[in-house]
Length: 637
Image 1 (cartoon, rainbow, N blue to C red):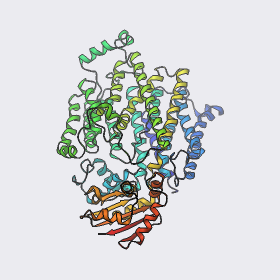
Image 2: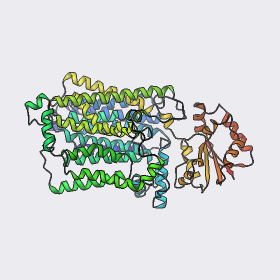
Image 3: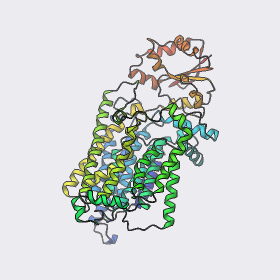
Image 4: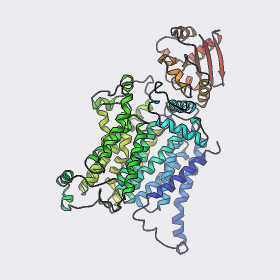
């Protein structure tokens, strides 16, 4: 649509403005109080050309999106579909960001705009070229939001989401407030929206630890190009992660303090030779932890404590895992005195435990509270998939491992460098917050996603370690600048490769969404749905609980095909007649799903066409929907 670039422009301008809350502590040399009229033409041009490059990058990117087609994606996803101008536009924005960090000659406003533009380009491109919100699994989230909006309440008997409804209730409220009650209309914007907010929060948190602006912006860039996990979509975990970063920011800004006496003594014992020579050595970038030059009033501290408690409650009511990440990372800091008051740490434990108690039996019976006490098995567990792994997906998995290995390995070296340069306290705090989420893998796989969440929650802090490896108090040496530029460039290349390759599996056809919304309005108790593959968004609207009463009420022809040599109308009827409680069955044929099923080898080419023709000739089936791309047949029982 013609108006698509407008929200993008608004996001860029808003984040560029908000980012100014983290201004450079030591302004670049060229940003002096020189009257504009006193500048020579060459100096004026030097100030303007980076803005011209940024405008050119954004223009190339927008033109590229208009030329990108997603009609026939292959195993390489969007990578071959993006025109060369897309890569040039993204590269220009990245060069501006990297060049600014390495040479640090651009004003903060330009750096903010460049970083915001890079975020929108990387995290917004896929959503903007797709006809419908991408990722098949977000439609269940859309369905829950629609259910709460339609009924004005939750029903804990339906599913897990109705027991942790914080995100869905908030989304339903905001949708009504902005005049878009259907989440399909705005869910696609969640990915880039959460990414922009996350970067601003990471920038602000980095400012807690350093006044060196090169270091702060380096942290932001590493966070941007290291976040391949793709958890920014319309989901409770993206919402909870954002609130978790906000909670860390408030606590570490206002509530930091000096540790209790035994810990302070241990710091002296374990300190590096440099710190022992300088027993009161401050942070090499400014005042050390607990020695802030800003003294907050009692009122500000009380407000901060109240805000943390509110944020924690919303997180607890929104997501099952995030509150325990917060406990692992922040509770030790309260206990050891790095954050005060100590009892706030206990509150972070009490709130999720009290919330879990009435839901304990449900969690234990449906999922199990613990997977297995085996960290290695939990960290490597991968759920079985009916889809065979393509060659491109195998290469993508190698790229993911390299990217994660680089970030974590460089961060570890950065933590050691920070320690050796005399700041054990800050190095230990940041390193702990980075690795603490890994402890959840001792007892829980979280459905195979645990290791991804662990990396995501550690990434802002790993990014600080990477920045410490290259940036010192005096800035960047020439050699360090070269290595830093090469590192961020390498991470960016890996990010693009692993982030856009899976798009074939992430794509949802707009025709499927329209058909699913039409069907949802007609679902009644004891109805069932048969689709070609599980990527059809059958769970999309307020009637989604109808299909959850029994596992057999939502199935796929692809799964059915695994049990029989050939799927026939008689076979379908025999299968559904065995479920005496069913009222009517809807069989959905989608061109997009048929193409995917044949590519994956679930059906031979043309086999589904024959099945649909047989259903049309069968008098017990009748066609009730036909958009050309999607056909729905009803079997009345």
